[in-house]
Length: 149
Image (cartoon, rainbow, N blue to C red; front, side):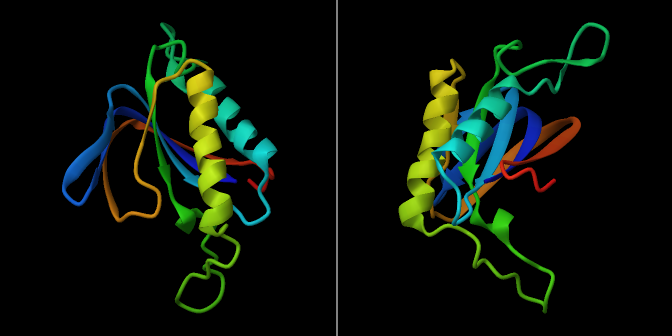
């Protein structure tokens, strides 16, 4: 499972022109599920998101998590994180999980984040979404449950 994490001052997502999720300070998390991912991968990503110290303390050091700042998470499913662009001009998405696996694992990430005490908004799985954000820093981090990077 892969995640792109962006520290934001605010973020929102629209589906068909209607706002379906929005947060203030916190993390925008794009989540991509691989066909070989398991519940353990989902739990790893959720726990990392909640505990990742990517917010500044009083000494301008990355020492605070989203929990520490009282922030929120906006989690968006994004199968294109598993796009393979090494050959040709069109990405291959063969490693991305099919919806019957991806939906429950994505939902597990969201539920686990919420169970750890962090408010978590979402987009709509499989929908064409418009995501807006103000990246704070900018700070953008990559996670891979298989530790590929």
